[in-house]
Image 1 (cartoon, rainbow, N blue to C red):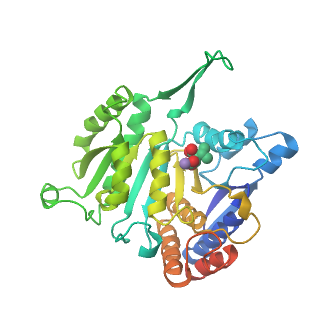
Image 2: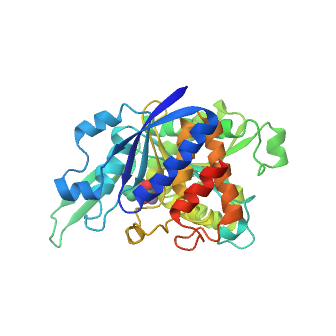
Length: 367
Ligand code: IPM
Ligand code: MN
């Protein structure tokens, strides 16, 4: 029987609670599809930091590097200064393990979870490919004259040929693959006649950030001819914020940089029903990838059995898909869809009509 070793960092706040349900549902899928999951738990997070002063030792990075997948619940602790755990655990792993893609599927499962009038599941079904190792997140910059009236703060956006190239290639490949069997419905007749099956939108700011987005844009257009089935499109980041709300059906696959990706995926999460269902993967296609629900540690809900575990469950589905268990991944998402449509009142914490654990049980039962 195939077996997979997976590192698990439950983390802070409600992280461990939702992780428990994600693992439970993964186990149900493993049983059904005939593979074995070996979980290896790590206690990195706020509590350990407060006890020992240690965020993530170098040896841990080397140990985690041995896995193909890491499952992460959430980081962020009310007694720890903001930034320490986010930078020290989440961003450090993304960078050191070269998880250069942040993948965020945006799919609405039923109309009533969408805050936009007259939009249903047929209108909200796209995926964002966020560059995950560069841009403003690279940490380049510094201060001069700190604390004086002459203080200067510099925060630079780093964009490299290699970094944009591998991110764009991943996005083109994904756009192509995702629509091989089932062409995207948003294409115009003339695009279909020209052999297009998918659309890839570059989301940038070519009109103002002329150095970085010139590199992205040139690279995008250089790669496009290699993917004749992918229709290319460009949108400014501010305009995309309007269109996500007004016409989410205009999008199939979107590729963007780290900072814009961070912002537009929070907006996108809201139109798919909120952080209760939004999941993401930090992908290194050749190395160690890490899967996580998009929401944070939600400390005020800790231990109350009220947080929605579906985002965590969906992240587990993405992980199994990434590991090569595509059927198990799809079965988890379909089970979540079934439970949302038959058993759940609202996707918001405390308003679901069931507890965290009960939702895990319900989904696990129909995987
Ligand atoms: C996300 C989060 C992180 C980010 C934070 C917690 C550092 O918002 O995964 O989108 O900014 O990338
Ligand atoms: Mn974010």
